[in-house]
Image (cartoon, rainbow, N blue to C red; front, side, top):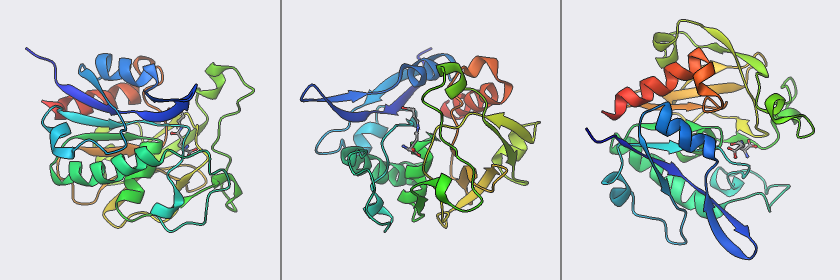
Length: 243
Ligand SMILES: N[C@@H](CCC(=O)NCCCC(=O)O)C(=O)O
């Protein structure tokens, strides 16, 4: 039987004066092994690919993480302090694609930047520097540390009662990694909180009125997914919605 196909959103970066479309390999191998699907990379072109064309070729979508930030103009925020750290072509594709995927009930899993895109696409706002918000922790990785530490467990999250994760996971508090400087400020009206960090930062969301599968997490369940019971469950559940 043919494997289901999952479309992974690429980043668009300028490398050696060329436009390059790329995805970290860990997302690709996790889609293959954790969700049992065929990974299909979705490039971020000047004129975005048509959502219906994409939906005709995939059984689900993965909105990947990225070092780039959603441009604040999309949520009425002040100009970014680091305007170079943007991917305006990705914004142009994903903000519309997420809304279209919800409408078309295409199963979608959103990770890190993907969660932030979902919140902005549905009318929410972002903190541009979570660590500067009074009472919030620093959710960024330490780039001076070895990769294992940067991507290793960083803080707990607690699952919110009555949501998708509450129904899915036996463990209600568990450790996650944390590699983000931005985060949800105002939650988009159609979304509900699924989990939060000890400082109150929203760490996972889903639709209040679910239509198909839509889950977004601020952490990275693709990192060493096979070694972590919660990550295994999330990928398995995503896989089940693809068929
Ligand atoms: N830039 C945003 C989003 C953070 C994010 O997605 N990090 C993932 C980095 C690794 C990768 O390339 O997937 C923020 O800082 O909040």
